[in-house]
Image 1 (cartoon, rainbow over the protein chains, first blue to last red):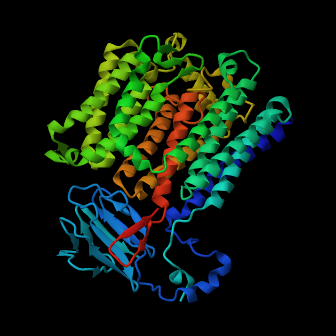
Image 2 (image 1 turned 90 degrees about the horizontal axis):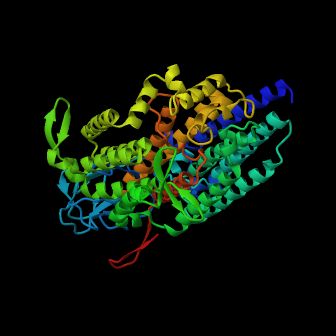
Image 3 (image 1 turned 90 degrees about the vertical axis):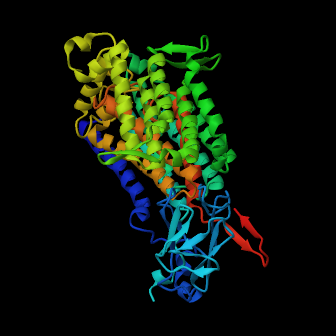
Length: 156
Length: 464
């Protein structure tokens, strides 16, 4: 084996090693620059039909639920059509371990393009901004909802 | 209206395809490394390349299938990254065993047994994924895990069972099977314990006491848990002469305490306690003192010649030095000259052959695994998984830091394995279980929220 071949193999191997690292970073790019990929629905071939199929989604609609305070701070949940439950129970979407929260504390659900917060008979109540939620109330973007020590808000 | 705006709410994709491609790429890189070793050492592609490559590929395919079936939403990168690290370790051990010198590093390197342990590791990975459907079951085992961890930690001290090898009493002999390092498994159990314990107690521990300069000190009466862990880790240091595990254990506890309470004061208290303990131990115990002398003055000829002196550290440094930026090339250096090149010093051996460029890539691989773990922790929806994922990724990063720092003489050298690379079954198995736990939690964190089927009445049925 000639020196030159070995040198080339060596350089090629290092290049491939770094290619792998860069490819890995490429896979998680969505993590860093927000997710633009949305293959949850039909794939590429069907794409042009989609705007017609889903005419009701508007630009101002919230896309994410972000925990902005409390022990779970930093967690985000992507909003779909399904309701989100908050509480201490293990089957809640957002499980809070907090002495001030009830096991089924509050529920968030979409209705006519709006998200509604509803208190599920919790002991300490659910607060939208400063006011106590007594009946299902629409949640505007960026307004804090307080459940025990946890604060969440909806974001685009 | 643009397409983006009209698209339904973004969901994290499963990205199984990306995972398969990356996995195949990882296996190909490893096969390329084998071929490189063979070409450089014998001028021909080694006969074992296909055997090794195909068995590694087959193993990873099996792991992939299990993952796709039982944790479909799991992070797509964890498995390929770990595969590549594990494969590079296999190649280095293979390369050491091929060198025709009669040095212990060449004689004791056994690529076949390491491949066998990788197989067992993958089996344990799959078993963990198949049987642990909900990682929150572990929260119920908090105190069991704590007790188990402590028992595993002290088990080498039990007469007849424990064995002392190379001056550290960290092994237990299993008749007919060989030795096992229970501390490797103990660290997993202890992370589970710390996470479960801190979920329950964090509110108390986060209470602020007196304020000193810029930090809120915790109340004196809340120091108990820290002092106990400190005592245990010092006990490990003194009784088992195992500096690495001691540092690993205490560091992980402090990190979890910080994640749970978000108080810098705990980190400062932890560092002060450990530094105090280490200095004290250095004054009282010979073996700790020796490590410090070697650390401070490795190139001293007298220390170099002493038994248990700085020879191995210096050989590692020489090796990395001769590797330089681009390395000597796989199979073209002399990593067999480093004592323990197949275990503690595999990082230095890799550094000689792949150079700084290769080492940086390797560290990037570790960093990416840790990043995925911390990302999982951030996305997790319940406090226990947040702490557990954070703790497991921290322990991996901490372990890499301790051994790489030791080998490069940034910190005193302690005998720890390089995760997934060093030859040795216990560590490999424990780390594969750790990865299975991370995969399980990332699956739970990335899965879309459970679908609620709404009936007309008040009842909600949750479908998972």
